[in-house]
Length: 182
Image (cartoon, rainbow, N blue to C red):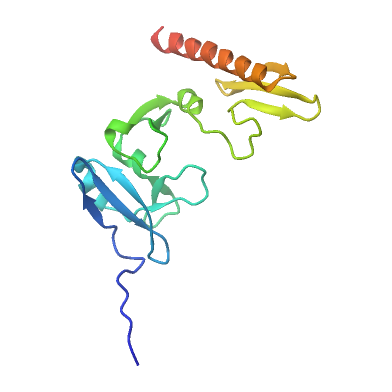
C-alpha cells in the first residue's frame, strides 16, 4: 500500500512570498488548493502572520479575511492593517480587494466608498444607479446620498438616464466635498 503524504493541511499557516516591492500572502481553499494571492507591504508581514487568511466567497468583490479565534466574527485584512474609526471605511483605490498595500488603501467616509462601488451583477444598464423600470417602461436614474435614495428621473433613452446619473454624481460629490472641507 502506497501512503500519500499531503503537502498542506487546512491548519497550516499561509505562505508569504517576497517580491521586489511587496509581499504576497498565498490563499488556499479548504482542499488546500491555491485560490489567490493578497499583496501587502513588507512592514505588514508580522501583523499578517498572526492569522490564517482566506478569501470570502459570498461577496462580488474578493476580500481577504480570517475568523477570529473563539469567535464567529470576521476580521478583514485591510481593516487589520489600517487603523480607523467605526464611522469610516477602508477603500481599495484600484477596486482590487486582494491588493492590501498601504499605497492602495485609504480611509474614506461610507458615502465616498459607495460612490466607488462596482456595477451589480443584475444591473441591466452597465452603469451604477441606472436601471430599467418595467412599470414605467423607461430608464430610471438614481443616486444614494447620506443614506437616502435620491430619484434623478426617468428617460426613454438609456444614454439620457446615464447623463442624468453622471450629473447627479458630480453634484452630490461636490456637496460631499463642501461638507468635508466646509
